[in-house]
Image (cartoon, rainbow, N blue to C red; front, side, top):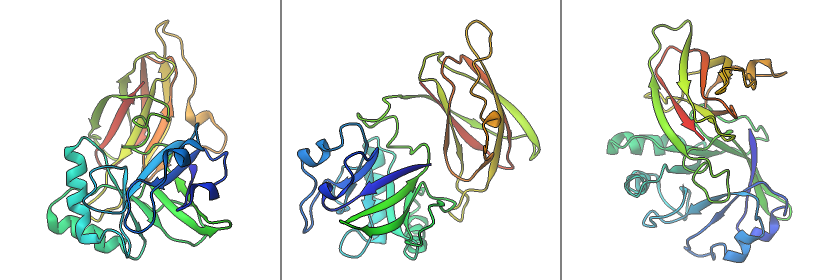
Length: 266
């Protein structure tokens, strides 16, 4: 899990932030300038738009004064046509209305960044990020973000630069423990991203990922088995990235009652 900062005024965000979000279009307040973005040369940058007619950005802001729930499906459809993997920001109480708008429009739901200022960084099932602290002095918000954010990570020019090579669908034969073999590039950036699917209610059903045994070109293990890491939580309710540098193939042990996707990156 990562920490992300956002603010109307970029200068309010700590200069050493590793992940920041800011506006790139205008309704009343000015968007971030190039100098604002330049304050964070090493941060992952998440771009937010306020207007549903803006064909740009990672995230559409759905809240009073900005886009409405009814406008969200059209923006998502437009962004997907442009090749983006979009996200909707809204507060927890508005989320059901947003999801209902997608259902009524017959548009597959996007990723969600949910605001709920209860001080708890735990990301709700079915969301990719949660804004859990608001208006921290001198004026910024704090969000927890999944280890991998589709549409942001791997495509943002200031992030890792790792690209998705392939996406595969895994259909479990049963709900017990199973294994799937994947083939990777063998590069230092080789990794997999495991993506539980959203159910019809807009929430992901949990799945579990245990041992990941990975091998290199020399048929030697490359390590990085997450199950050997102290405090590892095998339960997934959102996307999670597993770095496997140097791996050319890996066996992933999992338990899931439903199909899910694996992104091969690197």
